[in-house]
Every structure is written in structure tokens, then in C-alpha cells.
Image (tube, rainbow, N blue to C red; front, side, top):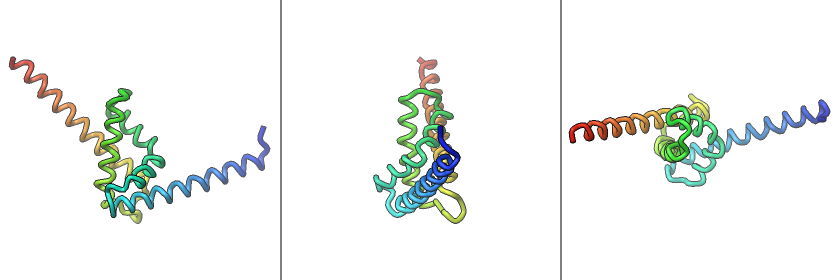
Length: 126
């Protein structure tokens, strides 16, 4: 069992780690704004916000692992493309990433549904 002092140290270390990760993610987004193909910056974004990206993919595509993984790749590409619109003065990185992730996942879902309805229409015409 941990002592109260050990729990306090753990919470303090965890908070320091969160602050450092947040700073690294913010810097990665700014690097992506300068170079949308900065692979190291994309990895940092994924390391920092991967849980949020996965949650967005699951929300829009369910638990299908193949669709989810493809959606996450597309979301990361969209983050790279749109990083120039990130303004750290008006929005924190987590909120911005979540918005971009949801918008891209929605766009992908709509494209998938449109393609599916065209396939169904084509099958009816035959």
C-alpha cells in the first residue's frame, strides 16, 4: 500500500508528465503547420492524442478494426494538412485535434455511405 506521501509524489509526477506531453504535442502541431509531412511530428501527435483519434474512429465506424485503422490514418493525414489552421492562442491542441478528427471521420463516413448507396442503386438497375 502506498503512503499518502507516495500518492502525492505520484500525482505530481503524473501532472508534470501531462504538461510535458501537452507541450510536445503543441510544438508538434506547430511543426506540422510549417511542414505537413513531418513524420516525427505526426508520431508525436499520435502518441499524445491517439486515444482521442481512436475514440473518434470508433464513434463513426464502430469496432471494425480495418475501417478504424484506415480512418485513423486518414485523420492523421487531415491533421497534417490542416495544421496551419491551428492557433494555440484560441484553442488547446487536444480540442483542435478532436475537432479535426471528428470532421474527417464524418467526411469519411459520408463518403462511405454515398459509395454504398451508389452500389445499391447500381445493383437495382441491373
